[in-house]
Length: 297
Image (cartoon, rainbow, N blue to C red):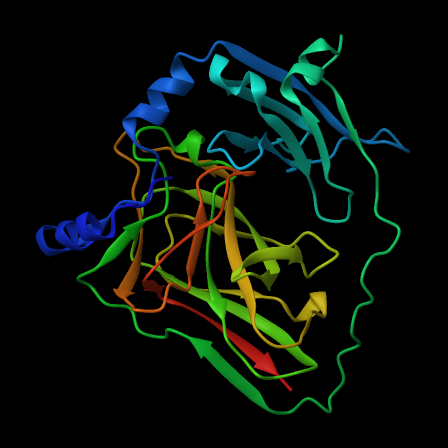
């Protein structure tokens, strides 16, 4: 995924086009196509050896990454320039693993085993006492400015990318009820997302707030407002947090250019966060997504 790093260029492009592009540029695509190294293997639980679906694997703080498939298999391509970099593998509920690319390449097998965390966060018990609700975010869906969610050259290169917003609230011990987002155009018959919630450190996403993986899916080229019910996960909120959508899988039956658009508006506050690969460095921009949450307190 790509978003314009030069803010002046970003504003100029908005003036001439109603659609913003959030996808990798051609140079990134060419780099992947000309990659000198391809890593393939299986990601499993270290104790029971069961495969781990949708684990994030990539070059730490670089736009090179992916996620394992539903059977725990992964394929990661990189260039010779990445040989001095660090490989990072992470999954909700497991310890994050890091190792140098050179060290990993020296291993005879490229299978990876992750260690489950022992100190998982306690979950809050939802009771009927929480009768007040609060909606935070942007409930409007403008038609002029829209942002593309996928890689316009190859949707499979979008796998692992994330996009979301900072949610500003002074509520403590609130419970997250749902996430709502608007999709203005969509020609995918299936898109699967992971919903990630982060604490904030130095105004950037930090620690995952949920001990369970949360997935959502849209089918049949659905557009309009989409709601993901988060009440069953009993997620307790204390102050500001960041909530993102991570692209996990997609299916296109139509033989045409892929399209997924979400309405946006400009903002002086840079509260929109994104990264174009699963272990990439976070960036932020001054836009608001048509995207809101409901809290109960």
